[in-house]
Image: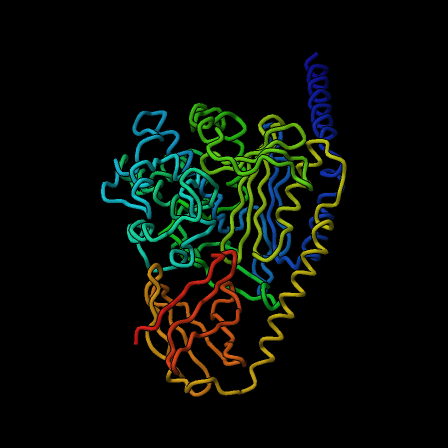
Length: 508
């Protein structure tokens, strides 16, 4: 009798497993592995880690490729990556929970917590709330100020103080302009309310309760972490180059978390279970709802590529319709890493993809491919659909770089090299120093600990600007000269850091 009962139970269990496997889309069961391996080849991507959570279980968790090109160390589910702006939802969630707990209000004016805080416009300063900061409402351009703030020696408070120099290009609450320093400022409210710095509060209230034991809220010490991936880029030259790790703890609430797919899957499982993880309420459902309420309109026009019509932003998370389902997601970009997280509560589905080459779009193509599979979108190879255009753009960029490098032929500039040397000032950034050597100029960026650049003369008053950190790019540069005197120059960095160039005026 007992044997028969056990036999029946075993068969029921086996049938349940089979049924669960059958429920996985054909693409996930039969094609995902090959698709990713092909994507790594097509996009020149050293390594990738992925996790898919469906119906409360992690159905895919795997690493592909390598985390270190030299040692060929393979990527696995424990490999660490900088998740960058995927950190923002942790900040938004922490603040939303504090709102629910009545420790603060998201509608509080920021001056309640920092009475001397100001932005460019006095009226905006008076009205600016915590929710505004989390919604990118300042009116500044996307990434504005980030060259000054990212990887620099500025403290969090110094960054906040410099925000009064960010001149908006649009009206307050009138547009969407992605703002890392705004998220920093909102995150700093946590310390004012709890007497814990952002990193300690996030660790205590989110990471530890979720059992995210291989997740670190700060980038400090990342190079010494066990199993951490190296960061790479092949932008501008097409040659794969290892990069130094970003040090962005001064912008921590906007993007400093280091994690792996095994841990991120726990975070996403909680998102799908109304704030619960393994039966324990980690975050209240009301707080999660607040993070998902649309705070900012991003676009209300239908996408020409994806089955989406409306896109918005909550408190650290994007949201949209996707073939009739509501999806939530964010991407993260740090030098050498691009990552994403995505969850679809109506489908009980979540995805995270972490990668170690910042010059590719496969990490996003793969996410959409998985969404298509689960949400019944007719198959289109998302990777191949965008690869041709990417390769064309990349070829043009490499050719532009090669052509500029070929123009360095030892010609002499309009003035002696020493005439260009001296200190230059930008109101927001501060000071840079340009010195002359025998054949070129060297730039020292005083707000950055290790960033330098060389200037090699090409022709027609144009110089080749090459940073010692490949992530910053290679660009032409011109000096403004009047009456045989150097007046100023404009310095450009990679668009992924900041779009507009900086004008530096010569002081001596």
